[in-house]
Length: 218
Ligand code: GRF
Image 1 (cartoon, rainbow, N blue to C red):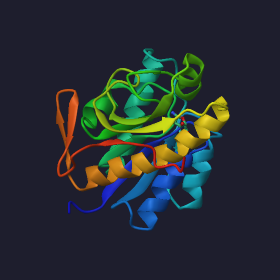
Image 2: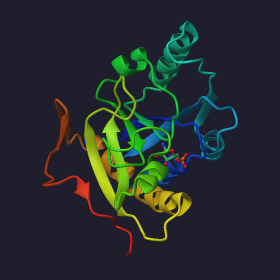
Image 3: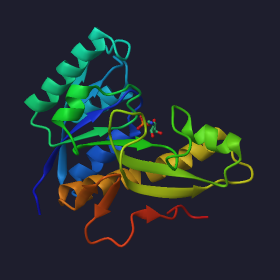
């Protein structure tokens, strides 16, 4: 066992993924500790959730991607993560492109969650896009972050069947539940030192497969 991993979370929204990670760290299902939460939104629910648990919660304005301001924010965020001695960065509903400094400092140590089965339905509305496209199976993906949106090596995926009467909200809620499960699994594998990146492929030592059928009752 590699010991408890110190986790830094970047989030823009309500933070249910963050909450699930905090809860599982607290009850021992994840060998980790969330030590800092950073948001580009001052009013992000994720910041409130962090504060409730005594976790350092910081907000930074993140200017338009590619600008000097964005690079400066990247530097500040990287410094915050390093000062908190973070071992793993989890992007959890973080709606901004992360910068080159952060990616370099945390190469192979930054993960993202996307609510679709990548490489399908990248972007902000993965759940809705899958439904509108007529996909019969939706899902979620945890992957290592890289310099492109929703792109880096895939760690784990879960399938979520689309129902005939589905709405974007209903499907999104079922996917979100599964996101919480697979994010916890990916972090725990990381904490155990079992993730090996080989090009685009991630090998999970000791696992025959890291693709999950939905765990929801059907
Ligand atoms: C999740 O669906 C995540 O996959 C997406 O944004 C949503 C964030 O949810 N990128 P939350 O803030 O963790 O509740």
